[in-house]
Image (cartoon, rainbow over all chains, first blue to last red; front, top):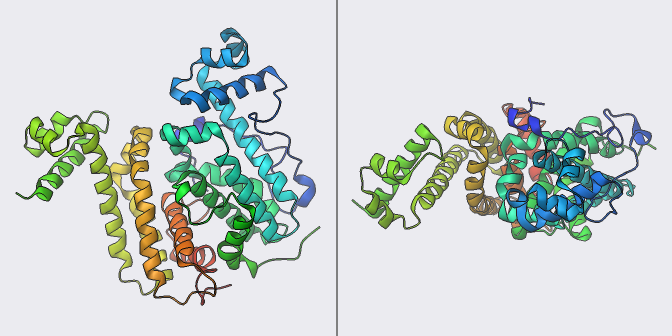
Length: 238
Length: 192
């Protein structure tokens, strides 16, 4: 892995201790149950979650640049001072916490879908369809993709994508490792991430295959992604 | 002087300005001076002003980049070899593109926003190029060339930008990458 570029160092450090086994071989018991859901849909339990949910609603309405801390506080039904107390540092800290929360929610939701499958093809299909659908249906992300691409692009363009590739690989390689040798599992996990990013953000409407459909995602995986890895498939280690 | 001559003179001038001062500080006046034309003339050629000049310059430079990639892959014998050469050369050319790397470190957001305008175009061009190449290959039964080209073009662009866990300077490794992820499901002689 290359060094993470300097501008990425402000990126959220996502604690994967719940769901991200660091090595292979730990098999299923190291893969924790998903714990979070996007605060767009989940009931906000804590003040912190209420502020994050409010931030998401503001961003999906006005974008990042035009959302003020006052907007967020009003939307959350608390005072500006409270937002500062919960997120010392203000708007940037709130935005980063929101991004971190949503990335965790995405990984958890995709992991839950993947863990419901019992074959390599099923795991890949469920992961693809769930991830692409999740990103498509995320109002804040889609607002940014359309109106403020410069907010998202540093995370997905050029070597800015590397930290996300590494994160997703850490998280999903062990899941694919139930069916594939270690190296192939990591490669396929990374490839899945590339496909999802491309279909979710780049000319998504222009894609030849609609990966939001489970059936089409399955056909895509069978046709294009799995043939190169099928020969290395190992017996399901339970 | 023909229309395309004057146009490319302005784009060359704009590139020189960006090289010297960066994106944000490149003004229409500076481009006009560099190109040796008046501001009024520049407006006549580029009614959208500074924004249009910058955007056309970025698109032009992107096109030049892919023209270089195309020239390199032209001599490779088949789709697999062309993809390998394209990834090895293209990735290195991006890493070694001094102006690109400099602006990426100083004005990353502004540059990425500019580049995103041409990304749809780039995907379309590569997709069409790959689809044309697929005509000369033995495809597996049931493969839709349009879908295959879309998949290959998207992966190709993804790897050009970021190598991830792959060492894209190692031709053998890139060959294995192309065989497993790009063409295994598409080509009849692909490893499966």
